[in-house]
Length: 161
Image 1 (tube, helix red, strand yellow):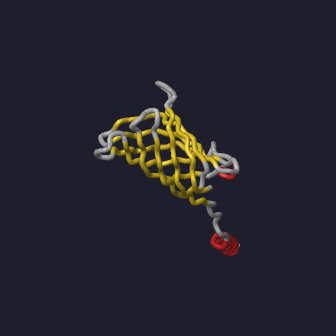
Image 2 (cartoon, one colour):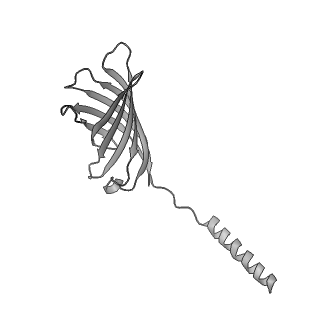
Image 3 (tube, helix red, strand yellow):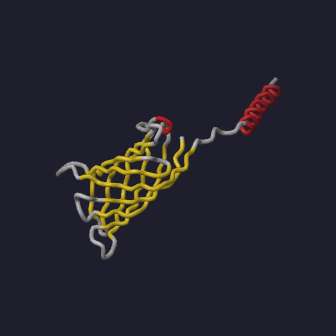
């Protein structure tokens, strides 16, 4: 009887292993992101976040955001930012971001910018609900005139759910 039980147990384990190998894993559903953003910055007053608004081409159609914190570094600035990226169908992604701005030598108030966008899936909505991950951008920002900050970035990456 012990032999039969052992054989049955091993057979069930072998069958379970075979089924696990034969059943494909559920693949993540991913979206490639890419495009260009033209940003304008709006000063709302002392002790208020700097507001960002931009038109986008590519995966998103518009974006809005706020610069929440700014730190000076040896080479320029670091920023904590939040963004809402929108699509024509009303879907949106919310991100919490880190930006590194590197001063352009000989061009006061102008910076090369690199941003890492961390998607916050619990706030995103519509066809973008449930997506998670990061994407990045790089570009230039002109901060010479506080009443007329401007930027241009190229964004790309992949997010999945």
